Image (tube, rainbow, N blue to C red; front, side, top):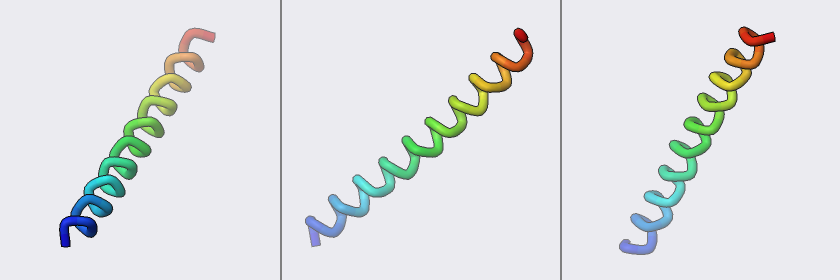
Length: 36
């Protein structure tokens, strides 16, 4: 049971970090587009 919880938590963290990275990339792209 503990192993399943650890796997689920790590998967959730990966998912959240991936969404954060995508959001940061989009924000960076908009900033670059505005400056040019």
